[in-house]
Length: 449
Image 1 (tube, rainbow, N blue to C red):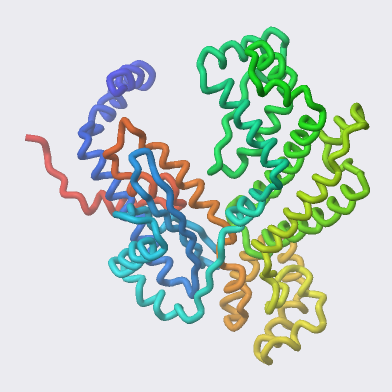
Image 2 (cartoon, one colour; image 1 turned 135 degrees about the vertical axis):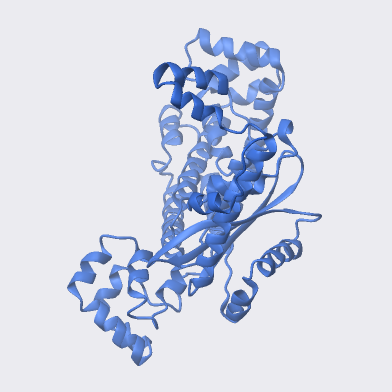
């Protein structure tokens, strides 16, 4: 690459630019050391910021990479320059098991090595934890009756029958192309991917006629399922409900979120489940688009009892996995608090006075509606240090940052399985910039000889 780049610079810019490119070191060790130096500088900047923050929250998750190494990712949310920031704090390998004990031992060692242990110990009595909302939503959605579980099994078997054989997969693609279908491939199902079920079932439903023709041609015993209108209706319902669950899951993802925002979305979905259950019991399926369209052409099919039962079970699971309301025991820190007359009676005199001052300030009322809730309270912290709003808004509601981080680990493949990913991942994921000037000054420069 470098010789071609030198030629381009020489042709387009001039000899001086080409000579500058020739000074770039190509040694593997040199490049690796410089990546490590930049990552170390970013780490030191972050640690100093975290130490100066009055409080912080952590997000951690583990996963297994292409070499079967168990990797632990740790993100931190902290207060800096009157604003909340999120960054990767640690990426390390778990030596043996992936138990909670091993994870916390690894984190504890990192804190001790970097001088963060005292800060954690000082605040340990006030520490709180939460289970990732994304994981809980995924677990709640797994529950299905034997009837719908059978539909899911047939769907997975159908996909595997077509895609596990290269010849069958090519023939199916050719069939879809010949009849100008909207899609030419089915999608594999994966239990570990949150959105897999909805996407897989939707693609299968859209190609159900092509699948039936192909299975019939191959004399597969699975073909008769797709000739059954009730099975097709059940498949349509699963497509609809998992599409709605996927929409909820996607809405829970993202950075700079807080417990109140995601809890509101979950509570709204739980209320919808209650509404849908009642409508299903009344044999009204208009909330499920694919199923509703199919039933218009097949009025003799009736799966309302199965649908209402599944929705009731789903609602029970959501109640099991989301039993608490994050707002319980706390003042509402959103725009609504400005109009609550009874709020101050729940607080101490000092906190109540501070809240009255804030609620009476017209400029603050306007700014609350124009910026994120966390930034609003972060800017008020120096003037009103006794208010605890940020402590409630600080925790991560989900492990979204970790999931994005694990996607970045794709840079470690079976062809580069000896790569030390920690420095590279830190540079990739961190929002901080290395102090290049400082790093250059620390280097010992000498001429070649």
